[in-house]
Image (cartoon, rainbow, N blue to C red; front, top):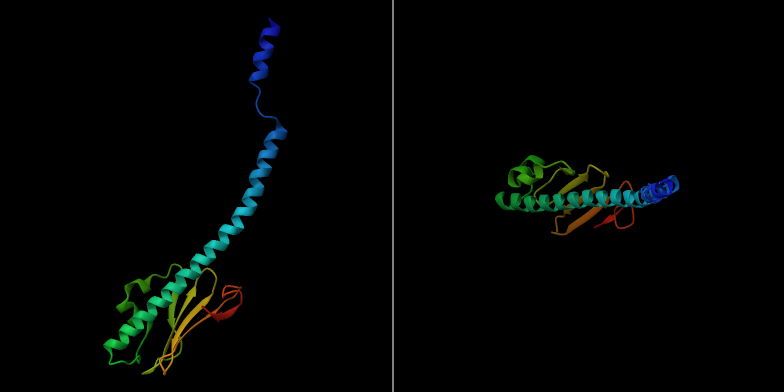
Length: 148
């Protein structure tokens, strides 16, 4: 009778401690590879949200100019938010005006909350539009400052 129970007991054995440790080790290695990659993608997404916000602010500034005889004097974040309510969303980035807008020039900036990267669009008196960025890390096309 003992011989009859022995084969059944063999079939019901679980995993050995070594097998469990190997599986846990493999899961740990995969997590160590995936988590930093995920965090980097999250920062890129926050920077993309800041870029989108500053582009929206640029469009709102041009609309403001159309409503004010082609001038940017008096342009403020509150005025931009009146024209474009989505600029009130500050979960991932905040919008601001750089300097004091005059009749022919303005500069709007969006700062990513996650990375601190600053994305700026400036309209010069001659109509030229410049897009610049300033990064605390290497978020501006491989450098800490530049254009985008």
